[in-house]
Amino acid sequence: MRRYSRQKLISPSIADCHASCGSSSALPGPAALDRRRRRSHEGRFTSAEGSRWVAPAAPVRPEGRDPAGARRHDSLGAVSRLALAVVLALAATVPACSGSDGDRVSSKSSTSSRIAPSRCPDGGFVRRDLRYAKREGVPAGANSLDVYPTLRSCKAPVVVWVHGGGWRSGDKANGAIPKAVLFTQAGYVFVSVNYRLYDADDTRPAVYPAANEDVAAALAWVHDHIGDYGGDPDRIALLGHSAGAQIAASVGLDPRYLRAHDLGLDTLACIGPLDTEGFAVQEVASNPVYADVFGTDPEVWVEASPVTYATPGTKAGDVLLVERGRPVRVGQTQRFADVLRAAGVPVTAVAAPMYTHAQVNTKIGQADDTVITPALMAFLADCLDA
View 1 (cartoon, rainbow, N blue to C red):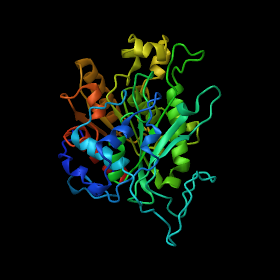
View 2: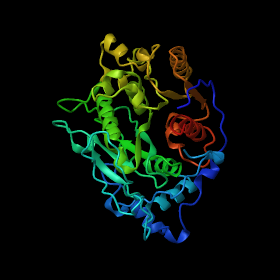
View 3: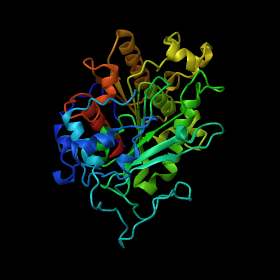
């Protein structure tokens, strides 16, 4: 992995990233598309969507680059609606990634620990609700993830996404389709993760560090089993937005979480905590969103702050940050970046003053986004494809 420090990143438009994934004859009509976009009460797609994920057969990168939260927003642009239609289309056949003898390989999780399969698994099907941990009293869905394979490679880099929602709401399905299109087109396996959410009415509310522990467990599962889905366990990026950004930064910098699974920080090639005020919890602890989850103990606030672990000698991977919002938010992000750089961690900072907090998430994968998506894809190419 190439490691170098960059202050700002200015990248080209990604309009060319949205090449057609198939012929127009494979697209469902508007009525069928509306049915497939209907959601269940849990925030997941209904069975009308079907189980097939039609992954793009070839990667498309910005400007010819070589290959190597909140609730779901329904106001997608025209390009995203086309992309959604493409990925939900029920194609007659999907080419499988197979071994040299052409045999299909089972997609069941490997029973051998951290050993990639010798042949490629089936491609083109989303695997939903894979349970990465079993905790007493925790619903299966809270500790589950979805895997979107790519047909580009049998050992593709992996992008793991952690949704936002203030630790109280959100789901791995929210906004996942545009991201899955973007990342699988680029030749990455995409994984979207659920974690325990805070509910004041629960007898045992999921307070800090429950979400961090869950995401670390999900990463351990990915490291052990993603080879069964065409992914490379040695090339994993962890991204998140809002609360998911704070979680991603915590797991990517505080070694305790991955160490609990006999893994080190170098398990992650890079991390992208996209837009959060939680890099220094003690600075926002009076906010009820944080107070409920992180409590009232100042020592816990420091312990829960990713900036605490940005120390010289850290094995943390490269970091991508987004600077936007009120001056206090921008200032905290810039101070976090300075501490990381002082610790020897390469940092890419993307200035996005024109975007709202929600848009930092919803713009990812949109054809009209010339800020977040190009910078993100260039960052991933640097840390995953080198």
